Amino acid sequence: MKIGLFIPCYVDQFYPKVGIATYELLQKLGCEVHFPMGQTCCGQPMANSGYQYLTKGCDANFIANFAEFDYIVCPSGSCVLHVKEHLHDQKQEELAAEMRKKVFELTEFITDILKVDSIDGNFPYRVGMHVSCHGQRGLKLSQMTELNAPFFSKPEQLLHNIKGLDLVALSRKDECCGFGGTFCVTEEAVSVKIGQDRIRDHENHHVDYITGGDMSCLMHLEGILKRQKSPIKTIHIAEILNSMEN
Image (tube, rainbow, N blue to C red; front, side, top):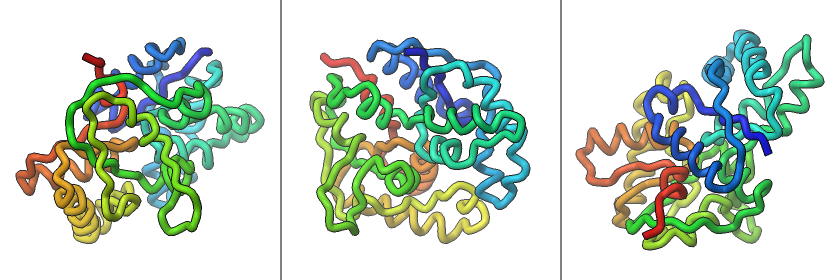
């Protein structure tokens, strides 16, 4: 299958290793992966701030870059959810509607489309899993704890066979990190306080790393960790799944 690799702008600019890990991982799983060089922001920041009408150029550019692929895969649940719910083009609405169905978050694509339930790797550390709100509540990547329903987690399922990885059970496993896109700018104090509370849960469980499927959430937590001079590090789940087994 022919995959279009959709890399969020902040990953491209600040965390290129996440994009590379995603590319390598998909190749290892047998996919033909392409990175369209003309891709830019999906338009989510504007939409989050109430300026959805300003994203028309982003939508047209997204369609131009990704229309040819069988699937579009992205290591960011929030960007995927935005495209799934908001990709439109008056001149190509039928094509836009079809493309909305072909966009997948990385772990969702691996488990639901490739039908891979475990990946061999090596990451000998104690790890806390941060569940992003967009991934959980929008894409249904894992079960919400407030529901009286059987628990599942597509990201956690993929981590279980990683050699040496100790995935801890957090006290509040699906609590928001406080990032919220442009919310962290307009409501800085509230955003930081929520992030500090989220980190405290990981600290109480003595993790070495915090992982997750959204680098935006991890970027927010990483900033707080560095300011607190914490030894805890952040790492995207793609980097763990792409780790080599020894």
